[in-house]
Image (cartoon, rainbow, N blue to C red; front, side):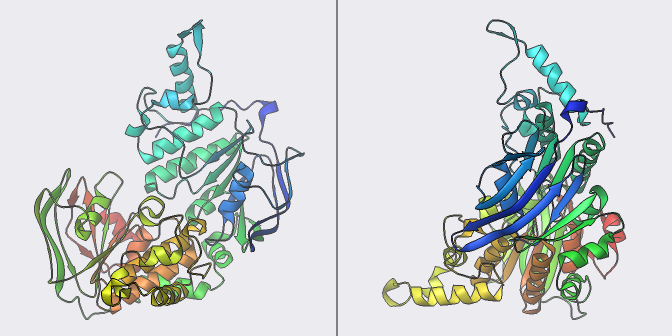
Length: 495
């Protein structure tokens, strides 16, 4: 493992304190933040958690200057400011890292900065590369600075984004779900880097749904509920059970839903509904798998292994270059894609439009006329049954939290009344309560006789949902292994 050199944090460049007082934010009649008060002291590592829709992302966007607060005050280093975005000592890392794939690491680190010049128009490329290498070494990243960012792993890209902020003087860092799409090893490296930065005087506020990250890294955990601070406690001594109690008002339901054995029975799967036989697509394959009615098959693997490509092959979105995809007569397939923001929903469209768009034939009357009244009623009923917030079919998809967006994507899949459900990263970036709702939904699909394929890099999903699990490595899939409620030790053995 690479070592992390000491970051040059001068005494007059230590992280400023942050004080948020009585901040409110409303969108129309909907109040998202209500008299929110929060203090972050210099040198702290603060975890910010809460259900989807609690106001976490809205708060970060207010601080970054994307939104303006309806009322309230923000102080940075004891001085009132409208927002802290654009301040040299403050940096924000979102899931969209703001990097340019076609530029080198060195060029990305200097985006927005004047070039280093030798004389007149002559650029000092050697000096720029030397400065970039020093910035990377400071956070323990050892990649050539001439490498195109598009060639890096997701974890390396995140570290480049961190290095860029600190090379520009940021000492107060907001990290918004930056590890939610990373492989465990990459996520661990990012957390290790953030801890080292804090140990040397910087401050980090991290929004995360991952309990393990919060417990391992942070000094305090702050819980947002309904736009207010519901809890603010030291992480030390809290433990996983205590953190779950903070996060879930209905802890019993959540734990029961996440149980890895209660949904399984000994009746065995039904008939084969889908078969991939020696299917090859580019570097992926040959893939051999069978999906059966009333059965949940899980597939897991590391980024770059071809994991998501298998989901598209199973769904039929990708046609194999060779081999075959066979489905039972007239069997229909529905897909929940891995990236709801870019592949799932239409931000400017309503929840009704997003949920029904794949199944409009259900509401077509004679002469091809769409029965919009029945469509609206059915979509409203579906949204209510999935407990989407806000519970209005005419609400705009783009303003929803991550977990509620995911429920709308599930609603679209359910309206197809498919025989096969391909769920790709079904709980990515959702809170513990939304995860439990999704688990209940998958259990219901299984009990109703659907064939379900869960393609995920989340081990918790595998043990909570799947009857059998296969692992994909370098495009090749292992034989499925049965999960009999055994512990995560089995997953370590499989991997």
